[in-house]
Image (cartoon, rainbow, N blue to C red):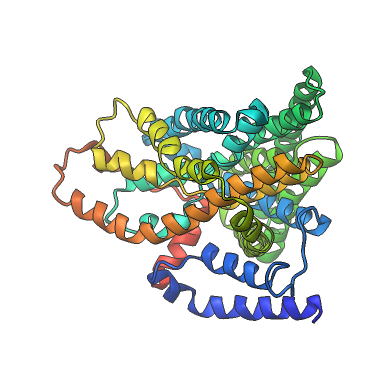
Length: 432
């Protein structure tokens, strides 16, 4: 059978999922679970109806464009002015929790895999540091969970993938340099220059594009669908222009999103809906690619206890201890600290970072295979564990808070802050 047949089956399954997605969600069957399984069944280790391979240019291009769109959409949607009421909570998660998570992850990886070097350890940790709120929808759609907790985790998820991107860029360069035995200051200079170019491009396109579109919107030169196309074009422009100039496209897209939101004062936030929707659609292909390419090799070749051990530690102490450290002094309840630490699912950003790192290390088969195995097992366990636990755990937590004193710090009333992933949650919840 041809690849067209495989694509036909995929879109039929996509249509079927669209019809019963909410029903599956009630059974804690999440979107990533469904499309990872589809990838396994249709991929080269299954029926081979989608004969894709790691390193295929089409795979790389699709994953890169998907992440660029979602980084822009996430960053452009968050209204930072609304965070002033409780900014220090998400700032603690991002400014203390995220760096400590990377450091803890690197330390554990270096202890378990010392022969792979520091670059490998740092890279694995950075890939697995971002969180994905979409894997814990039940928590974010539960109105009985305090707004302060939901908001902090949502903002963290909306921004930490963009913040982690420069670290991933740096550590890919270091890992490649270590593997080629040419470690010098050159890798650092190149990586930093990529980031600097990306920041400048992102600011320029985000500010100029945002101002021009705001002016055109006020003059009623554009609206609706054409305006949504223009915002999507800005996201892609930031990515492509940065890459063309030797910069990092992901950093550029993220910075452009922040600059666009600030330049438009978030008056055009709804115009980013199309960018988010398109990116989300493409993310289904990315999850399918992940299932098709990485799941079976990881399951067949990863018998090493250290790989499974790292995956379990990554989802627990490597995430939960840094989060607990970032919350010191806030006097949160222990169950709140535990819930906030646990709800750090590894999702789409880690998948895409993993694919990019695997491609970059393609010349070092052993190191690339080990990295793919560690990342794959961690994401797979996260998809299952967080997907299955989100609903019962959020209900348990909400029930415990019913007896909490009204003066509990987690119950402080703060305004909601819409995050791009929050749109997905609210749509799913309203439909149910």
